[in-house]
Image 1 (cartoon, rainbow, N blue to C red):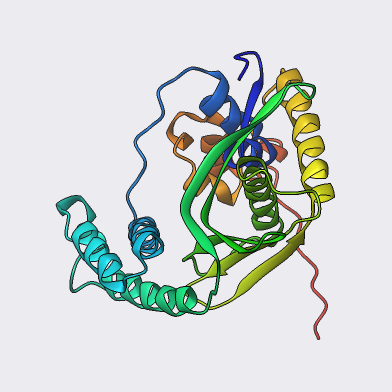
Image 2: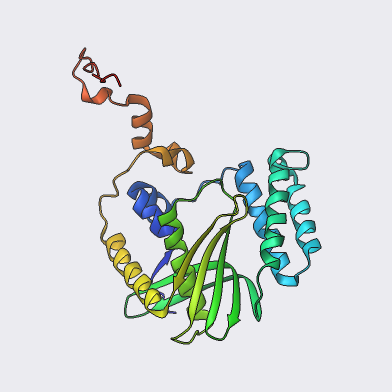
Length: 268
């Protein structure tokens, strides 16, 4: 793969869309990334994904149970360790995952399929990962992204599934007529976000990625977009825009001593 290709991932694209300043910090500045903050939700998600990988590898639930327990008993994961609410949530999600696994009848399956899809003419190489891939038939495939959060942003999830679809179609050299069911399967809520995708959809995804790459490479200002997402940004401690929003709010709109006008709410 040519080193001159612009490399893209789902996270890289979504970071650029969400906040240009965060994108600058993460992908342009060259600064070392801050250590990721450990939260119970993050630990639970990682534990369930590791357990589901073991389950997919062997088909034996005990392998997943052992991985889940060992991971959550690690001292650095004590926020979701045995006896905590997080541990119970992880166990419940994995047990839902066992039922999901048993509901899938396939000819072959793979866990954690990750690779690059290079496109020389478009000047890009897209990297993505599918948590699970199943061959249902020669021309029918299933791609799953396991979710454990309380909610998902649908359009973001759709873009993630689209990139995973491209990787699977590329790595497995699917025939043009093959269709792929891409599913974001939430093991906490039981909800499934399903996209039925074709070769044409993969081409559209790569065209979108190439056009986004053009914008990302042409960006010069990298203006911040402070908002609720700042609370989850590892770079927020270095971002002046986030600090100003938190410290000043609307005060910058006012002249010295000026007050905001009274709001006039009509009574219902």
